[in-house]
Image (cartoon, rainbow, N blue to C red):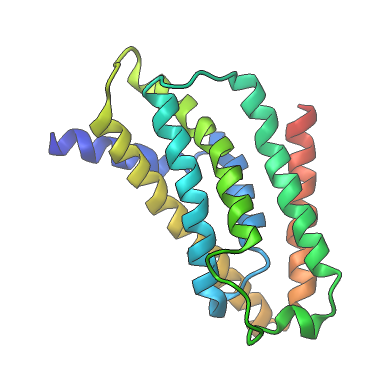
Length: 200
């Protein structure tokens, strides 16, 4: 049982880095682009919200409680990227001092970005379940495999988010890149990739 758990843990972890899942990587990049390492509490709340959303639909779809169209999900995922980038561009319209200000009292948990991340997570969970269903075949109640795969996805996701924040720190502090410029470049690139996915 331990080896089975470890196998699906590794499958979940490496799936998030797989080229087949690069749309999820782009979404995470767009999701975290407005934040820096000092915003780790907000990022934690944001990623937790996303996790709650995709864990729910990953479980329901894998256990075949809900049915869905894989083709529709493939179209909805780039839409979640586009909408996330629209929110980012609205942030970028602010002046640099206002964007960088972190002392202003804003909700950390009950915030609109967290709600959007949770809703978008519902879509991404269906995307994860397509791959997991391929691995499981005809197994009807793969609870252990589902748990291990989900934990693996989360570990991979946390590593990616950490790398994004560290990259942002390096560019902003090490190379003097403006936070607004970083947000615009990342969002613009993500929009381009999402557009290709949407028409592809």
